[in-house]
Every structure is written in structure tokens, then in C-alpha cells.
Length: 213
Image (cartoon, rainbow, N blue to C red; front, side):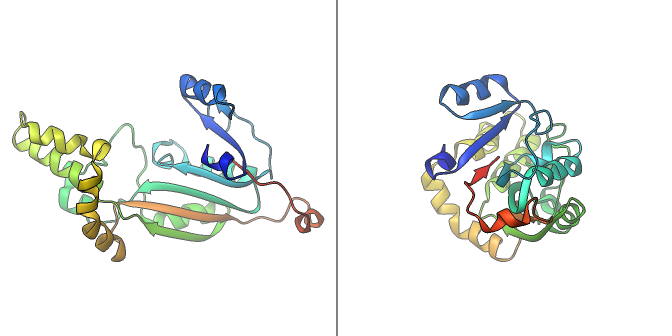
């Protein structure tokens, strides 16, 4: 909705049929299935977004190559993933909030992301450490629940990342900013450029309508 409101010609891909149907009822073009079963056209899109998706995929390299196929020359791919290379899993160990097997099948840090993206045909990779401390709160809850299985506070802390009030978010902002500054944020936002020759070099000088997937 935000992309369409900003003037983009937007399409979506959604596994859950009911969610896709709701978007379709609101007038949006949403394909039911996976990126591959959607069979999107090659060299078509200026940008693609996958927020908290890549860690759930069995074969992220194959999916990134599919993004590469559908993006235009110098198209942008943006996505977010948990950061396994930060301090959180070292300190919380098995209590880390993001160990969500089997929902999370992959774990990445900045180095492994750069390698994977390069192998998938992307370059000019920008990695931003999010100013986000929600993993820490959830991890504290899991640790407390192991010590006190019937603790109501533990359950509240575990559920907190999904229901954190604005006041608590404001209170935690300084710590979140500090962790991002020292490149130890628990979540990463990644932006990469599709590195391939233009499909039609002569057409690159002409203005084209923006599209995103």
C-alpha cells in the first residue's frame, strides 16, 4: 500500500492464500505461492523487498538468484535478517530469542551475507545494523522461564517484542542506538544492487515506470 501510494507499480508474493486474497480484495496484485511459482518476468523490476524472509528459506541462494533474474540492470534488493554475528547469541546461548528452529532455517552475519550476495550476482552491498533491542528482551524472558517455568514475567518478556508499548520503546532507544553504532545490532537491513548487463542498453536512457516486487 505504501509503495502504491508513492507511485510505484507494486506486486506481492504471499504463501498464505487468505492473506493474499485480502490484499487482492483491496486492489493489489499479489501472487499466491513462492517467488519461483509466481513466474515473474525477467529484467522487469526496479526494486524487490523481503523483510524477515531469507532466514526462513531452505535454499536462500536459489531464491536470491531468482531475485537477480527478475530485477532490472542495477535494480535494488532490500531485506532484513537476524544477526547471528552480534553479541546476543554469545551471551544468551541457547536462550537467544532468534533460535526458532524449525521456523528459522538459516542464520547470517555481515560476512556470510556479503559472500552469499556476491555468489548470487549482487554487488554494492550496504549492511545497516538496526536500532532494535527486542531480541534482548525476548532472550531475557526465555532465560527466566528456564529458571522459573511458571513465571508470568517470563511470558510477558517473551511476548514483549510483539507488543512493546511506545513508552518502553522510547526508554530503550539509547541502548538500541549504542548497539547499532558499535555494529552489534541484533537485526540487519541489507541493500544490494543487481549486477548484470542491461536487458536493452538503448532503453536505459528512456524513462521507465517504476515497479517493485
